[in-house]
Amino acid sequence: MTTSIAPRRAAARAAARRGTLIGWAFALPALIAYSAFVIYPLLAGIQYSFYRWNGVGPSEWVGFANYIRVFTDETLLGSIRNAFVLIAFFTIIPVAAGLVLATLIRSMRPGPFSSLSQTILFLPQIIPLAAAGIAWSWMYAQTGAVNQFLNAVGLGFLARPWLGDFQTALPAVGLIGSWVLTGLCTVLFLTGIGKIDQSLYEAVRLDGASWWREFITITIPGLRQEIAVLVTITIIAALSSFDLIYTTTLGGPGRATLVPGISIFRIGFTQSNVGLASAFGIVLMALVLACVLPIQRLARANDK
Amino acid sequence: MIVNKAEVVIGRVILIIVLVLTLVPLVNMLSAALQPADTNPTGLTFPTDPQWINFVTAFETGNVWRLMGSSIFIVIFVVPISLLLATLAGYALGNLRMRGGRFLFIFLILGLTIPFEALIIPLYYQMQALGVLNTQWAVILPLIGLYMPFSVVWMRAHFIGVPPELSEAARVDGATTFQEFRQIQLPLARPALSALAILLFLWTWNQFLLPVVLISDPLDRTVAGALTFFQGQYSSSIPLLNAGALIIIVPTIVVFVIFQRQFIKALLQGAVKG
Image (cartoon, rainbow over all chains, first blue to last red; front, top):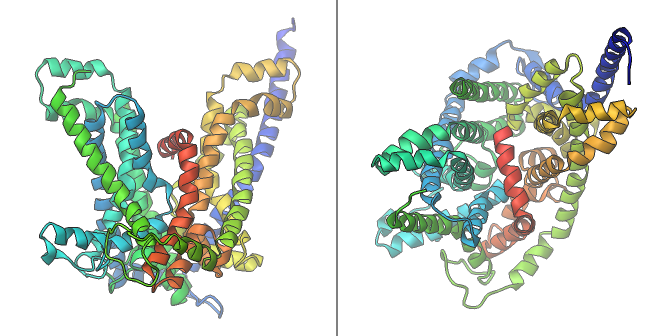
């Protein structure tokens, strides 16, 4: 096909214009769904957060009073603190355990055992968190398997209703999160290790490096990307936990396991303080962003 | 790779311990579910006289048919509509790259990390205003919007990877954008689409917060959301509660085991892209 340059350019410009129009036409339905059910409620939530409103009656402008209360009310601050404690169980334990496990399993040849273990490690990821909560409430019960095990190994004096005890309820709930997330971390790290240049491992081994040195100098740097991804996902899971707490403790005993998700639910729907609950929702969103953005930036900076 | 014998053995042993720890809570549910319904079982006990009837009782009193129907109804709308909208938008952003597309992309990324809890209060009043509160639509509509950032980012990533020569060839042959989309791009997008479908199915099926807040009758919720109903219903019978919860879990596990390769691939990709 032979055409002179000028008409071709004009055609290209026309195509670009047509492309823009068609492009927006293609994107429009998604944009509408997103705007209607994410952006609109977000803006409405910001609006509510400046009012005192019980959900039915008249509302009253209160300025930043709701936000001030989020940062001064001992109960609400406590629930934020609990969420940060959960990070230890949702992020630090699964990521650390996943790293160690993946390194140990690495030597495994692909085969039926390896794929069976992958399937099993993934199971907690498949079932609803609410169901995991029910399974573990029963594990932790006074007559449950945890106490049964402790009695069997002679540690019966430790036995207690784990979720009903002020001291142990939060760690106990946190460990359910570790149970759910460790498998995901392990399997993701395993695929990551598979992509690391194997000759690097052989080189340090020939240098007589220890297992630990190999782990620090090759495995960890090689899995930077995966670590950043998993830390991000698990921090979001910890800060916005709801399902697990709802089916295990509902925030109790007392406020021992109260987290922002449950607080928002209670304040908004049980106590009908829509403004305060909305303000807390906005604060929770800001907290998640404040934790996630630096990690993303760090991961990107490392890539360069 | 150089690995010595001792490491292989240690690796195996630790792996087996972790696998057992992963399975114990699930096996423990089964052992409790098979004890006589009116007893208070102790920990992990082998059911000497397995009461399979508990599953029948839990199935009937739990209205499981109705629950499954309600869940399927929600999934049937959420997943295909999300896939359709996300594919169209992903194609626009990844292939057509229209003017202003970058702005739209950043606008969507903003929504990726918003926790559902931050939106649940306004969503409640929005659904009330739309007159769909306490119906399945109160979950279907928000979920489509909430899944949109992830889904569009996912499909865009796929379309960016398709060589542009394909589009050029199609256009030289005189195909319209829509023809090119339907006949060339859609068939190529099938793997990305099916992985996204798996993720959306799983997230919808297991969705808890939205159904619990937005649908007051547990029987109209997703099965996961109805678990609270089971907790209330069977608070006095640990065997029946566990049987009910297992009935809820088993279909997902069966689907997972059948499609596990696709599931694991989708979940890993989902983690990396999310």
